[in-house]
Length: 283
Image 1 (cartoon, rainbow, N blue to C red):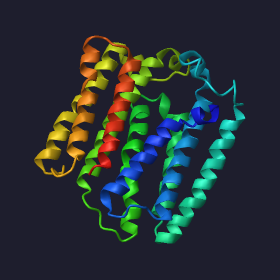
Image 2 (image 1 turned 180 degrees about the vertical axis):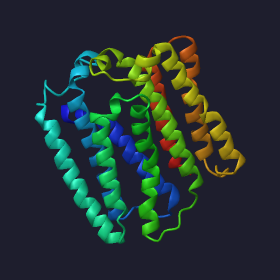
Image 3 (image 1 turned 120 degrees about the vertical axis):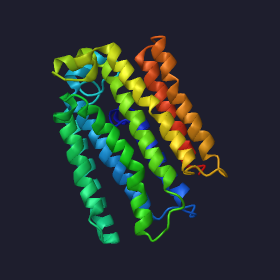
Image 4 (image 1 turned 90 degrees about the vertical axis):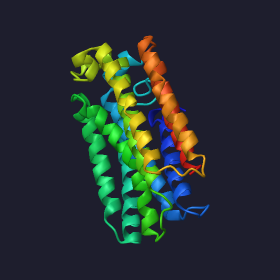
């Protein structure tokens, strides 16, 4: 159980469901080939290793920010985070090499080195930099659906309609960008020990809450653009569930106005992302 908490199993499940939703929405094949499953495993391994190594470097601040949830140093020894990081990345490297050989494309090897290097740099350096820490994770989440499209093209399958996938990628980026800022507000006390220049530390908690709220408000015009350019097929339930997900995310505006705690705001945004993922299966 503690191992799954270390690698953030719930977040990994959401990634897997997102990639599965891309396959279901873009192909008429009910069962993906082994190559697609390998890409999903590859993505989960890289993300899980990134979560483990991030906890390794965050152990001092986590002792203050979330003492009841901390795993490393209590139930799991710190060195296991390093072991998990290297083992997961080694397996992911072999998978990327196979996929690059199978599809005669260096894309998968490039993605492996890019994401692993980015996550390591994030944990060591970028997390302390203003805004870059928030953008880093949001960007990696946002490109996940696009990465899932690559093997579909490589298998010679013509995608049904990538418009909603691209819109979902922007949606996922903005949701996670806002959520990362909210999480920074929760972690102010511990982050100060590591000289982290987060938005709430530099500009204050109130301005950070409004910044995260404004990011979510951008979702409304983006969704309207989807309808305007007919990116949402009217014959499916995708538009309904995607609209629900946007409406859920917009509910953080009243939460902000009435000064609800950041924990509730973060949960609302995760719920919004979950409904967005469900929408992919209804495209």
